[in-house]
Length: 117
Image (cartoon, rainbow, N blue to C red; front, side, top):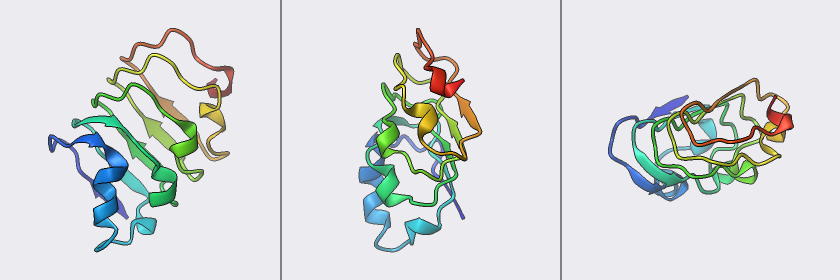
C-alpha cells in the first residue's frame, strides 16, 4: 500500500506527523511513501513506524541529514534529491541488503561513502 503526501506544505519531523495516523491506519502495510515537495527538516524514527517500507521519496524538502539507524531495514529505494544534505553516513549503504537505488542529486555533498557505491 502506498501513502502519498506530496506537495502539502508539511513541515517539521516526518515521524511526528505519521504517529497520529497510526490510530486509524495500519502503518505496517505501507510499502511506498512519497512526502516530496514539502518542508520536512528531519525524518525521525521511521524504522519503528514503517517496518515494511520499500520505497521512500523525500525529494525537495529541507533535510540536512539522513540517519541510517532511523530508516527501515526493508528499504529498497531511497530518493532525497534537492535537500540540504552535506554529509552521508558511512552506514547509509548498509541500511538494507535489498537497497538497490539511492538518488541524492542537488544536495551539498562533498564526499560519497564507499558503502553507497
